[in-house]
Length: 294
Length: 262
Image (cartoon, rainbow over all chains, first blue to last red; front, side, top):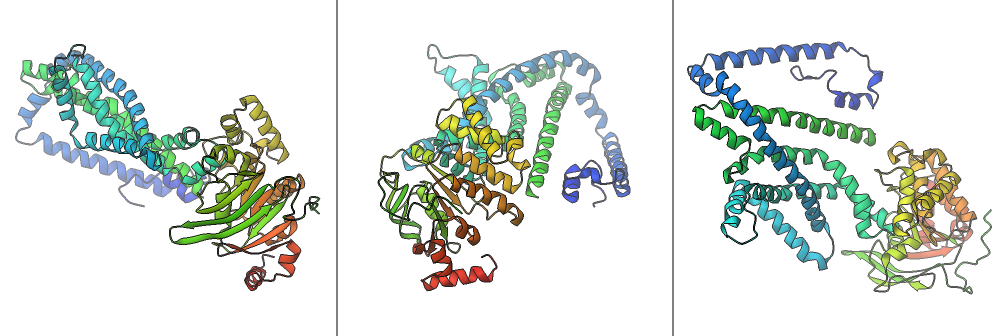
């Protein structure tokens, strides 16, 4: 067992591996587990004390503290910035729903067999290649300024609309690959079993393959959702007044960078619980896998 | 012991045979797996396919269920040529049940849903009706208390029995069993073979690929020895197991005997 890692009672995955699925059979307070937890605690405290000491005693610390951690600017900008985050929430929630649907359609299209459907597979492949290749911010610029710039009647001019479309196009390309990996991870014998019972190809996909595939890729889907949340600030470039744009406005009026730290804190608060949930799901799947592999 | 020996093997009856295979060829790339298989199975007949691994037993069953496209030949089920072009494969598969060596239960569904899914979706049976029938079948095969369980909570023998019930729920005319005890621990083999014996008593037409020679001798009306993609010899269990004619059959059975499997 490593000295620095928290290899004690917190690491339930390992425990199950060692005890064959019955952690309760192990003694509650293992001495070596208590010892390694203590070592981890001490080493963490020492490490962060040293880092803090170095930062606070650096030559430019007072200026940095003044421009990034200004208490007055902080308390003034929080009431501006936090409500602006509602726009980001709307943006990434609407986009996420569209992404999950569009990406699933793309993944299914790319998984269809048979030579007749080659053009469909080709189109879906081109879509994924194109939108994964181009940096998201460029898609946002091109759609957000380009399409309203055409001046066509009836075309929306609201930048929020183009923000949703751009993020959906970019992220659905990534997410479809996640789905596709999930579909491919379901053993072909499952589809064979479904088809042998007389289910059609679509029914086999709908009732047998996809439910298993999606369950397996929930952690990476959540991961991409976290990425989407952060990338929602990119739409500030086409004039959507969201959290980052609001912080820029506040920065411009105070000549102080503290509003950006407020933004950073908001994202930490929102994404860390999601990241922990993802980790928990991964650990749970791993435990199940180990239990089944016995 | 079986009561269905009234049908003489391959006899020309008044009605078409349950299964008729003519000149079936199948290759995977350069590998010729089946080389001109001819086989007729009468209704209510139980045919066992024996032979070493790689002799083509599994592939033959998968071809009959149209899970593998064939290169040449014909497969006729109850008078209908299922290998003809334009045949609705889904309709054919509903009439032919197959049970696999590795069970292939749907792990994300309860036993009940595993059994009732295909009747509901492929036959359009109502949920109530499909479930009532699933209950009846599960009861019959000693799985009454497992309805709500998920496959990973069952033993291998129970999983394989559920897989058999799942195939039976479609009321197949013909049941194909592909080495269904090969993945089981030895102590679980008997419970699965008992199910097959009961089906044979009930008159189910079955083609069984198996390594269980004792079982084949016990249950089969006819035994076919496959070797390198051909049916080298066939006959009643007594003929094949006590007086095999072909040297390859003798060799194979001697090896099985040496391994203590007969």
